[in-house]
Amino acid sequence: MKKVSEFKDERELQEDLAEYLRASGLLTFTEIKIPNMHNSRADIIAMTPHRYSAKDIRIYEVKLTRGTWLADKKFQKYLECCNRMYIACPRGIIKKEELPAEIGLITRSDNGWRVSKSPRLNINPPKMDVDFILSLIYRGYEENRKQRDLRDRIIAEANVSLKDQSKKIGWEIARRLDKTKESSIEDWCEELWEAFKEFGFDPPEKFIVSDRYTGERVNLPGIYQIRELLGGASALMKDIATIKAIGTYLENIQLPEITEKGGKINWLNRKDNREKALKLISN
Image (cartoon, rainbow, N blue to C red; front, side):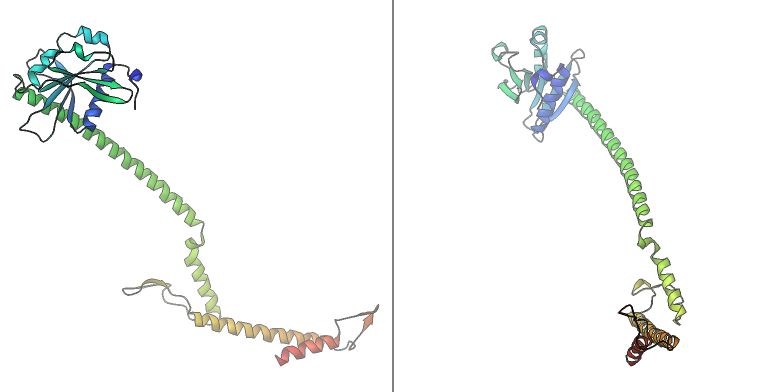
């Protein structure tokens, strides 16, 4: 909450009081030009909403310093067009004994606003007429229009900002996906199919299959096909190892069964090669 010493002029004090009154549930207008009063302008006019039968229109005249209060000799004229009138000022600027009985006092301290003196109720103000009510309506419309314009501007700027942010996020996601395996999954699957074709599997007519029941799916070999291929490859590798072992044995058949050199057994001998070949054949 703003301290009293921080208010630079009466306009800031006026806006602070208007905010307080709105927070209290009152319909509040600022800087209201009052008809038929020589261009007089009330600082704040507030009223209790939804109480049409028991009218309660209040005028607040804001004074920041005692000097401006002493210089103002016309504040009582507002009693002609309101049910209650208050002088609003920092605490200690004006004593409640200095005010006429029909005028109230509301003061601002560092802790907020407080009514120091209640005003006398003015039941039938002579100038609270149609022109006065119209001035409130016009002012209310102007303030509402400003709020709508401000809201529309905020929404428009927010949408532009949101659009830009979304675009940046989209580009960032696309950039990251381009560097992942997901972005090349189709190429990988096509290469896999080419490898399967080399081993006799028929290629599919369509790589991506779509129907009304299952949606889109990748047409790849089944697990049983992959197991069959891997099993065949494994058996083939064993056969190749056996043939190589037999070939090594036959290639070195002229060597002795066991040879020693420098006290160490030479394992590259015919006996060792023969045993390896027989073991592979028996498996």
